[in-house]
Structures are given as structure tokens and as C-alpha cells.
Image (cartoon, rainbow, N blue to C red; front, side, top):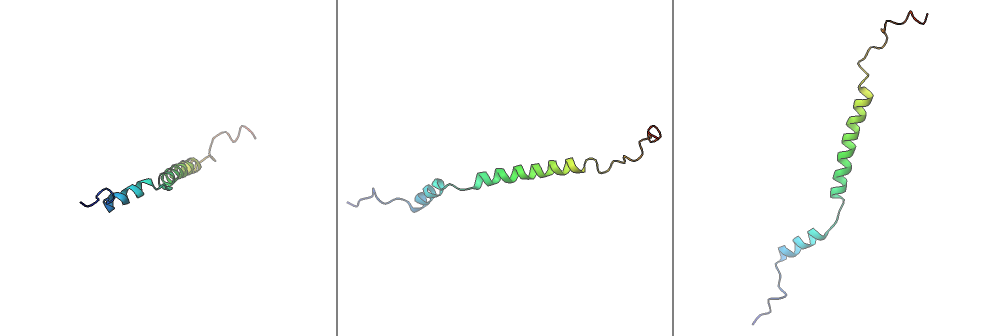
Length: 64
């Protein structure tokens, strides 16, 4: 009678090894997402007053 206790499915063994490996996948994904959102907020903050024309306020004569 053959001993079948030691013969495992090679695909199951590879899945087990792949699941046990840790890597920067989730951390890198979070860092990338936060940096993109931060970059968008920084661009909005810096560019929000770009289109305003602050030279014509009408109170130039008050200080003269």
C-alpha cells in the first residue's frame, strides 16, 4: 500500500507559500493613495487664488 500522507498537491503548496509571503503591497498602495490625495489638495490650495484679480479692490484711495 503506497504512502499517500507525504504527497501533497504542488499547487496547494505554492498557494501556501504565496500566502505566507509578506511584502510591501498594501503599504505601498496606501502610501501611493495618500500621496496622490495630498498632491491634489496641495495643488488646489496653491492654485485656488490664482484666478483672482486682487488689484482692483476699490479702496486704493482710502490709504492715500
